[in-house]
Image (cartoon, rainbow, N blue to C red; front, side):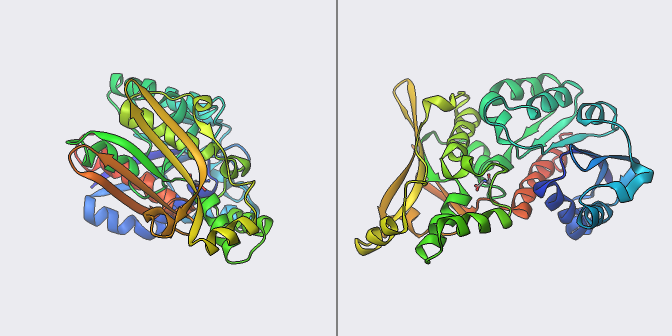
Length: 345
Ligand code: HSE
């Protein structure tokens, strides 16, 4: 049995989802992979910081947060470490970076990730800021320090968009990427088609943990644009500044627009696309009224879809959950398994 010690930076939706996965799947992972994942430290900006070398009980973390909204019930494991001190001091093989996404600066996640990699710790993150803004540089840093950086959860939550494009399609050249990459806006459009008001649909998306802390990023297309930037950086090695991505969200769409599309046998979707044209990459996010026969038209709720158009295989389509706490936590687990189950760590 190999013990993999983890430090978690951030214990919000996704962090709690990860703890829940360890509670439910820990035994299976030990049996199936011989891997015992132990959370040895957690640091959350508002809930507090904890450290226990022998491992914190994931269920105790969840109970504490459910009861008091913070870690005050776990006082014997409390430490004064902030996020950077946690990364520095916690004896761990991997850091789970789960602080809030910031698409302007990537901070504070960028600093957390760079520090962890410099210390030779693997990093797994669902944070879109650093992946969209600085992935190639961070991947080089990881390589230099003999460790790995997993960002699967940053695009389509647990649906393996990154592994499909980067690993499974490595024998082909991806020419075009097109998809529905924001679960919140797709969920809102679906609920509005069913008769719900925009504000109520957005509230539901927030309650279900789909929306960002600031949901304007979802409904105005910034989140989908960031995911295009991540795909560009990870798959093509090219950083795509967010301001170079033409972007329009769903906020101008009314129930009347959706109803009139339905009368034309069409459906509005927020479509993100990325295509290589000569030397340049063209990227855009925009609402498009698709005929019902279009493969993306049938994708509803928080589900995402992605079509990789390749030279050797033509289009390859992936459809699956695009948001949610367990779904995103699942992505962290797939990255951890990719790092630790192959004997590469
Ligand atoms: N807010 C994002 C979405 C979460 O709705 O798709 C997953 O990245």
